[in-house]
Image (cartoon, rainbow, N blue to C red; front, side, top):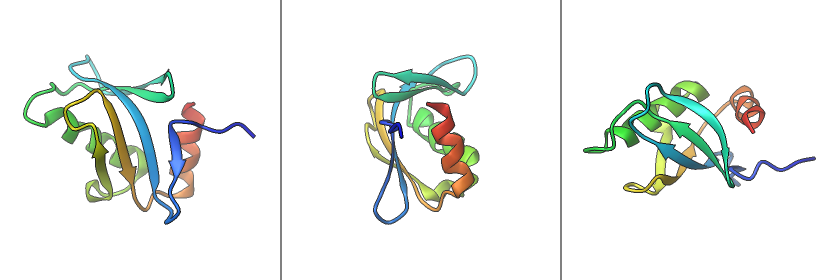
Length: 100
């Protein structure tokens, strides 16, 4: 069984994602692995927290959870971020694992 390095299940059932973010892109999308992180392009600019808000909204939509279930753990002003997603379904976890 291969382990997905960028995606980790927390003991309480939440997901912890290790991400590399490229703000200011043409569209918001998953790109693929970037080292041990999943690279995501964001259409939002990296000013006034807009990219972080767009990232949380994108992940909430992808996982089918409310925006309040997505929390930025670290990397507020960095491209390297750790994000927690609470209450993600098994289907959302499967889609995440299929990405890389």
